[in-house]
Length: 364
Image (cartoon, rainbow, N blue to C red):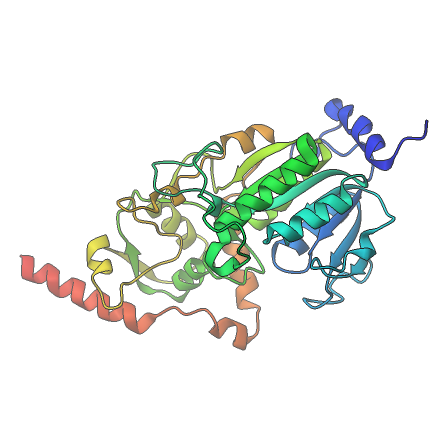
């Protein structure tokens, strides 16, 4: 009987337990595999492509060819659209697929159904936004958001519930050949959101920096390189299940550790002033800072995502200093137009600091 590519991948990867270790302590793949990435040219995709190529895998991209076309000239790219134009995926087989572009359950179901018999393992990139945040912590079995409008495809309004249904589609179609990675805020070079990037850039700018809330508030994010390496590791080891992917360590990182850790990678003269959470909330408009979540409100668990299952499966974290320095270096090398997109709100913060100082003098 002739084995399909999927069957061969399953048997060979099942025997990979004693494989040689890489310098990072992860087993090397038994052989180069064929990897299909749905998307692949946005923020997280290119890091996954580069890591897979470094590991010796043969990569194919499937996308519309609109975002960063030509980014990987040596990589096969299939042009199509998840909404009704999947024909380019027919007739080929891959050992694994990473789905980075699935937001609408109907479209995820279409691609998963088409690839069911031509792919060994399907890794779906999900989000921590599937959870109900109003609890003290978020392990993988925490309560998920209720799907109140299953017929809607309004991603802006129902991002989390739609991702819940996307996960369900992958699990239903691929069963134990499906893997779900629920990401936290993703940081690192290339990040278009500036949620993490704000802090190295602001601290590098120097002077007096507002440190919001309490020093012991937890902070979480995941370096995009750690994410890429973990995803490829899950595929190479044929690991199924659901995994939170949140760092920068397994134990909680306090806000003061986070800020002082970033300061250590710059030579700027900077000081931190801790400003009370209520004081910031009562500004008009309220002053908000990236990666800071009140531990007194309904979103408190956003900073207490548990990644123990991922660490047991091979998730590793690079040091905060490395992420901060390399993200800052990347950002400073971007065009002036791009750098201007990050709003430091220096004038706003100066007004807040002045008001905070006046309050302090009034209390003495």
